[in-house]
Length: 480
Image (cartoon, rainbow, N blue to C red):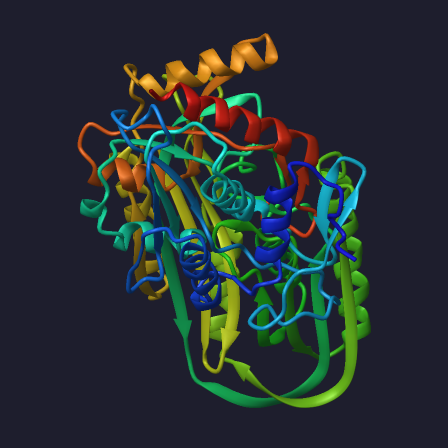
């Protein structure tokens, strides 16, 4: 029996359950693109599928809307795959296990993928129905948004007639988003020869942190596990000699890492463990109000011979983790409470003789984003790291003459009897990519209530999904 049986709107949640059964982590797009393509074929709708697995599905205007300007409905089909450390799932092959708890929809042991699967489900429901009033619809399902908006950047927008777009990748029902940050990815690599060494094996893990979306949550004081790890390593290196075997934690640059682990060789693991736990207790007291579940776990593994990194690479890693800029750098002077420029060290792992440190950079100003890249470049040049940048996406500038915003505010007031919040956000949205490609672009971003996205605590409000879907239908009805 379906875990979502009885939820309304029925077809929206049925589509979401079908989508959730398909592995669709970023970079694994074939099966979900097949699903969208087969949907179009089944419903006799014209579609385009490009080499990046973006799928565009076209639906003609309903009666009375033949002369209205087409509207783009847009969401991305990939998701961030995070799981509890001990939860057994292969994100390349397995679907999610969904369940409802009160007003919230969740996934067992993993991210829910409502960012942005619920958008896809709502749009498919609109496309399937023949009882909705709407102009011509161009439904655009993009790929690999979570790893740099790759699909949107590769999309040929010349096939689109519309200059108006409703993006459904927002996360607060009482808010319409009208501007967003641009961003990029920055990777630094530390490389060195390995050698075999003998000592007592010890694995130190930072865990229990909240984590979260590095655009949405970056100004909430959520702690970065890699930064805490660097702080502890810096302290311990002043007391003990040890060797680096491996490091891991966080595989998405745009997710604030909630755990980080390092494996070491040392001379006296029990003494090391006692001192590290003592120092971690000081950190716990310091950050308790923000991170009440923070803890450090240290396991010893007896005397071993292991391949280790050189002392030089270990020193460089500690310097990078302990001294790197991270989190909010500048707040906007023009828009109240808007983070203007930030960065997040999300990726930290070792493989063979290479350590990777990966960042997500964001700014609502192009010049500030470029300056942040330059800052990191100079920082890592001090320790001779190899550097790679990419995944650049432009900011979405505010349009004070947006007709879609006016329609939205009218429909919102009629439905809720109040004015919505009109906000710019620090997170990146694909709206910026579309705005960069389409002249005279008019766009809004809306969505249901989503909490703790990009974490295993991600949850979707069921009632707000019904409300935002009803609102979407009213907006389409008013686009005449």
